[in-house]
Amino acid sequence: MEKLRIMSVFGTRPEAIKMAPLVKELAGREEIESICCVTAQHREMLDSVLKVFGVRPDWDLDIMTPRQTLSTITSRCLLGMDEAVDQLRPDMILVHGDTSTTFAGALSAFYHKVPVGHVEAGLRTYDKYSPYPEEMNRKLVTAIADLFFCPTESNRENLAGEGITQGVFVTGNTVIDALRTTVREDYAFSTEALNRLPYGRKKILLVTCHRRENYGRPMEEVMSALADIARRHADVEMVYPVHLSPVVQECAKRHLSGLPNIHLTAPLAADEMHNLMARCYLVLTDSGGLQEEAPALGKPVLVLRRETERPEAVAAGTVKLAGVARKDITAMADELIDDPAAYAAMAHAVNPYGDGQACRRIADAILWHFGRGERPEDFAV
Ligand code: UD1
Ligand code: UDP
Image 1: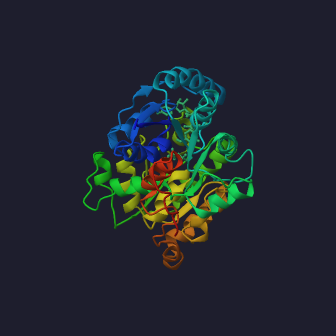
Image 2 (image 1 turned 90 degrees about the vertical axis):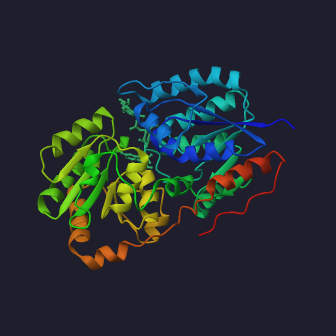
Image 3 (image 1 turned 30 degrees about the horizontal axis):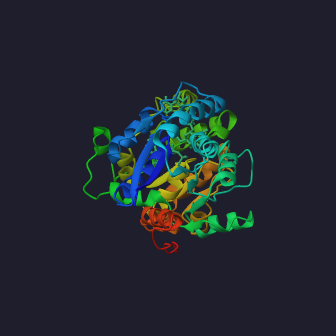
C-alpha cells in the first residue's frame, strides 16, 4: 500500500514548538510519509525551534518581512503554498492553532481540495477582536477543516456548540509532549547569564508579552506595571526574553532598560525557555503557550490579557487573569510575591492540557480517518 503523504504547515515559534513532536511522530509511522512545509512567518524564532527539535523542513516559503501586516503574511503564504502543494501532492495538510500561517495554510489546502487536520482545534473566546486576529483565524479554519484535534474536552464542547461533531478527537495539547523532551533537572543553559541567576535566593519572575491586541495603550500599562514590580521588590529578578517584533522591542526597552533587576534578553531557545520556566517563581505573560506550559511545571501564571481561550488552568487555580491595567497587575503580583499562602494556593502542578500522548493520538486518528487503524481513545484529565 502507498504511504499517506501528510504535510504539516507551520511558520511561527509556537506552532513550531507544538508541531515539531508531531512531525517526528508521523515520520516514525511506517504507513506515513511526513512532509514538513514552513512558511517562516517568523524567521529567526522559527529556525531556533527547528534546531532545538532537529526538524528539517522539506519546503520553506521564507515569507517574513519586517513589520509585516496581516495582509502581507496571508497573501505571501497563499502564493507560496500553491507551488508547495502542487509539487508535494499531500493526502492531508495539518495546520496548527490560530496564526495567519494557520489560516492561509488551511485556505490553500481548500483551494487545492486537500483535506485539512486542525491541531489545537476548538479554542474560543467568542470575542472577534480578542485575541486579534487569532479568534477569527481559528473560526475560519474550523469552517475548512475535516479533522479536529482538540486539546481538551471543553474545546470539543465548543465545537459541538457550533454543530461540529464529526471527525473530532480530544488528544491533549502537543505542547506537553514537547515539554517532556526539553525539561531536565540537570539542564545547563547555554546562555551563561541564566546559569548565574540567583535561583532559590531571589524570586525569578519570567515575563513575555507580544499580542497584537495589546499594542498601544495596554502594552504601555503592562510595561509600566513590570517596572513598578521590579522597583518595589528588591527580592525579585525579572527575566524578560523580548519578542523580535519591533513594536514590542521599542516599548519594552523604553520602559524597562536600565532597571537593575530586570534582564531583557533575546528570545530564548525553546529548551532554555522551558527549563527557565521550570526554575522560576512566577510567570507573567500574554502568551498562549506559556499558559499551558507553566501549570504543567507547577508555576503560577498572571495572564496579561482581559480574557483567555484557555480556561482549564484558571479553573484549576494555577492561572489568574490579571488584565492590562497597571494597578491591577501590580496588585496581583505584589500579593503573590509577598504572601506565601496566596502563592502556595496557586503553585501546584496540574495537567489539564495533556499527558504527553497527544502526538500519538493525532497520528492514530489520521490513520483511522484513512481506514488504516483503530480510533484512538480520547485524552481525559
Ligand atoms: C504571531 C502570530 C500570533 C502568535 C505569535 C507568536 C499572527 C497574525 N500572529 O504574532 O498569533 O501568538 O506570532 O509569537 O499570525 N520578527 C522577526 N523575527 C522573527 C519573528 C518576528 O524579526 O523571528 C518580527 C518581524 O519584524 C515581524 C514582526 O516581528 O514582522 C511580527 O511578526 P508577526 O508574525 O507578524 O506577528 P507576531 O506578533 O509575532
Ligand atoms: N518561547 C521560547 N522562547 C522565548 C519565549 C517563548 O521558546 O523567548 C516559547 C514558549 O515556551 C512557548 C512558545 O514559545 O512554548 C510560546 O510562543 P509565543 O508566546 O510567541 O506565542 P503564543 O503561544 O502566544 O501564540
